Length: 374
Image 1 (tube, rainbow, N blue to C red):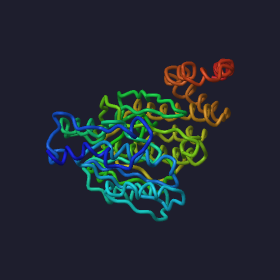
Image 2: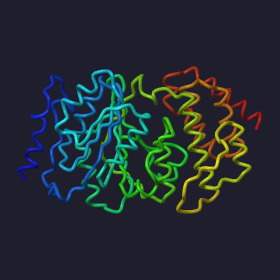
Image 3: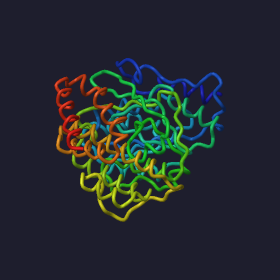
Image 4: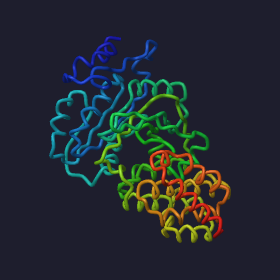
């Protein structure tokens, strides 16, 4: 028990700070009825980083101050030239492995980290994101009770301009939703080493949506995906983040992964041609192994989820009205039930209109135009 008591005093051992709150002057403590250390699962966290000196210390502390005795923490730096390495060295005694060298990017670093891992459950935490207080103890408690699970996700928060906003995800048909959209927040997702071995590691050939690619492969493989009602992670929205602005690289990666999914679930050729006409599908040979056959309704649901994401991304971030209209027309003409239930309802009730009231009129005019041309 002495080891656990020492772990619970980690806050006193880490470099001092004048900052307050989690993870500066607070720490997670083992629950009163915590299992013996040897009965806890080993959890591996990989942090890829490059020139994130303004954020990485908070990330590091959020992991270390979990006070989880079977934590494996791996940090792979891509050759930072700011103060990142200075910060990492301060915490070196509590890090399982770290190194700094020029690499091929974020995905390649995560891939290497997973290759070094010995954990039974894994995740990666980017160097501007955080784990929530008690996240790993909550995860471990669930894993001990539910051993037959491949993929776990919980509550996550978006952090921007000093504000925390909880991301509420729909939790029904989650494996199906993972094929066409991204129904959870990546840092709040953990998966088993056996599941990763089954589907293969991160695809380093994808620049941005390698998480969508990995989780879609897991869903197609028949992985059991389970939500737990616990706060697990905080996703930081900041200007330098790759996903802060929707861009061409993200669009390219999403379309590539989605095209692989469609080939894997064998969508009819006529539908693929229609999707190609709006830029939502591209020809290729790569496909993923699947554990079952999908019916037409499920395939249409996957396509509708992807188009629904397009509507949001083009409309809200790119202001790309031409592509927005193409996607909405596609839904109205070819998957009308999804246009009614998902797209139109989403636009009217989403936060977009709370921030941009003039868009009410634009969307009304657009809807009328669709009605006249359908």
